[in-house]
Length: 460
Ligand code: BGP
Image (cartoon, rainbow, N blue to C red):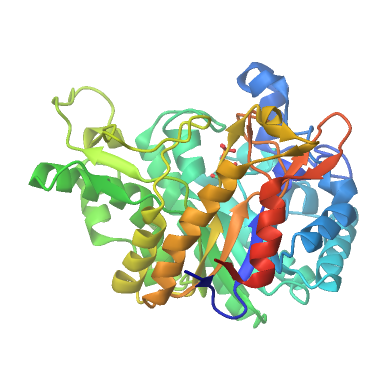
């Protein structure tokens, strides 16, 4: 069977500033929470490689863009670093950063590669975190100003903007499960951070529309379909709660322009409702997007709790549900994440049937592999497992599109092996292998396969 994709389908990959640029504290850039965290607690980071050790996109962008072109990308997502563009978060714009981003964007245009630009990909400037980060409404305002500056500076070069990448992750990592700074565990604070992020997003969208910028604005969400263990009402309720907290808490505001009433009721019931101000409702309504980026890695397998919670313990999501290991599930043995290809289809069908079939695309999907050098054959990583992974996901994506889902593209995570938050280089995801010592780039077999697939706009 031939899997042909719609005309002008976006074929590409995604990355982020903090994970690729390097020059963490150079070129006028100030520290993000990652730079500061690594400096103070290097033991948290895998083999103590911190965010300064990257594929040095800041120097090698021209070479990397040539490689993107060679891999037949017609689009590429990366982010602007807030702490590079406005080192104190709110004041002067760093001219060196403007020169870097605008020259890089021009080169993408020159090569016929559409830039997709994220404004915030986990990299909170430390100066803003010191003011409370997303817990502080002043930071919400500051983000909106930063967004406007980006629209004004680069609006003539960028037609696809994304306010946030995976905004639920800093909530989970920083305020619930201890894998992002400021590594606290406090549900009420987590709820406030999530709420303020929705406001920051909506504020940026409102500014984009008020500025009459051309192009479109969206957000990138990591959607994790929550599958119940059984059709028993208790399991169904558990799955509903997981979906509400981890998907709909952002999906409903950005697609429907409102907070889900059942989420508000739930937070009220457990006394976890964040402070709302007059005008918030209207602001959230203004945050509806033109385009949704979907990051899909794995689903959640959910069941009801088998034991009662200790009512004296602080409230956590696990009061409402539990996870279970579905027998026979397929795992990525290296990253420890489940591989469930139909999930990509289920997400699209849910968007089609329950959210008015929004314009969307797969903005990340990928397979992290440990010790990938062991698969080198004749000087090249033979990552057939990654080709199979992508093909199997694309088949389900194709099915969704053929059934009317409005999915416009597929971006892989990621272009080149990059530094990852707490895992550094443990799990490699790239189409291109990076030798961290020499900075040598070598295209993997999957890169060649992707180039052919993009060129043919599909595969057999
Ligand atoms: C996504 C992030 C990326 C990237 C990817 C892989 O959630 O948007 O930044 O890191 O996951 O995850 P990891 O690097 O933790 O294996």
